[in-house]
Image (cartoon, rainbow, N blue to C red):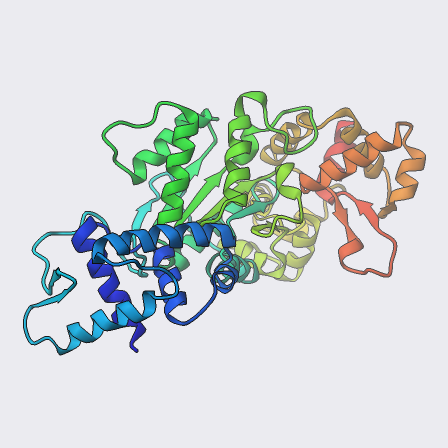
Length: 453
């Protein structure tokens, strides 16, 4: 039996009588059935719930039954479709028939849509709001990790987390370039101007569907979006998620007027579908830190490391032997290094040695402004922890922090957890499981705190 031929015929049957092709999930179920797989196996192999597979299969068998005039179910679908395929292969005319069903070998009617996903260079790309990226440095490991999660693992929700300017959006744009043909729809949206959830959904739906009248209630908008991402394989990238979070509260807590986003992302992570949402943020959303979510992943971006030397090469800085020292002092943060390299050009005649000879770490006006905005978002407990760590020469054990900061231990623990979600605390526990966990802040933030005190 040629499974590809059977699938092609089933798709043709369905389109002839309904005007719609097999969608991705229907094709997956039918292919698994033809291979003799159980629903549990189909669900497991495709990272779906068994209930969703069973419900979709039931609808498919009902549609095929109406089309063929015969009761179709999982147990007999293979034999009946094989018969039709055989009749089709031996027919010398342009038509095949089975139980008074006629199928023309050439369709005069153009398909309304083709949900059946086949990688193509002509997939729908809505990327007008995507920032232009001129330079991309390193990040090969992170890029490959994201590709694996999206293409092989079918992860539904991914958060890309890191400090402002660390290169999250740049990485996402590079990712789009390399996986365009893996999705039917790729859409980029920024939340920089804090659209309400209904405005966001209306804008998103207008990009992909065209019903005569858009749903005017939030629940119907969400329902329409969920139906769409189940029927089509989509990658939806949402940037600047942190704009929806409270200031002066622990990290990742939605403002009351934006809690609709929380409910949307929760549903997307929990419901069965083939699409993926990439959320770009400088603060990890509180709900999406739950480790037991099978179809959620989080990637934290840190500094660039040695590949940051390309920034200095592009800026034509001198004293190459000192470049690595400069990278270390600024934590490999690409935007900070760009700003600092510009300052070295303008004030030190491009000489890195002269700049490093300055008695204290120099922060540009842009870096200082960034850090001041970041500082204003912290709770009092978080500021206490940062102030304490800024006075320490080396990393400090958690128990020492709890003992020396005069505040409730529970508040300090919450503050430390929140600072980690903001990517402001460095913790060596993941590097060496046998050594005590030591907490510290990066040298740039430390220098900023010292200058402000």
